[in-house]
View 1 (cartoon, rainbow, N blue to C red):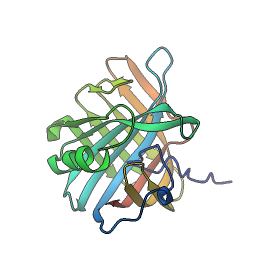
View 2: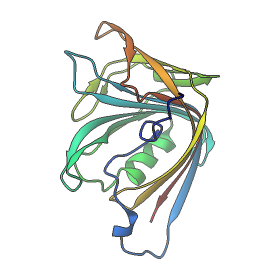
View 3: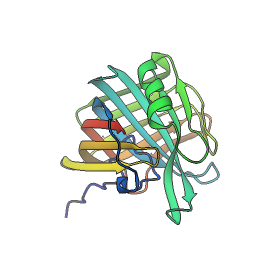
View 4: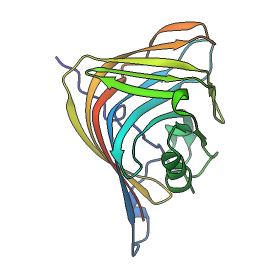
Length: 221
């Protein structure tokens, strides 16, 4: 039986702390930004004798309100009292696009509870994400710090193996941001290479995916 693509795994650019938008008061105006990613991947790096688990999300944007750019997000498991459980919370965002960096720092992440996420603007050669068919490759030539984990320089190779499935999701954040995603995703295997940790091998815990097309609308009310 073909395994169903996990909704939680295909939410590239997911910010945890999801709550119902019904808890916010009505507003008079809102602004929406649109981006399209031609490829991306999501996996969890959880290696014994290293740091706590980290969820890694990568994407290459080929068009949209912020133009062309590569993106990498690191999320960590944090306990959120209102939810009464551990959820993935964005800890660091890395991009080679000044527009995307400013957008996430000042528009998406601003006003969220907890420790502020690290937002890094890097050179084009320091972060590369691309897709060929069912293969997504991401490499970063710098150490990525965050309040909980530090991800050394390395690379990820995603290999999709299932048929693509379309997933639609809408998530509301406590700061009034709503993220709407239409993702064409596949289950995948991921290989992580990290010279600093002297590791080259598989990662992921059954929730690794790639996307071969992602339409994203982010609205702030």
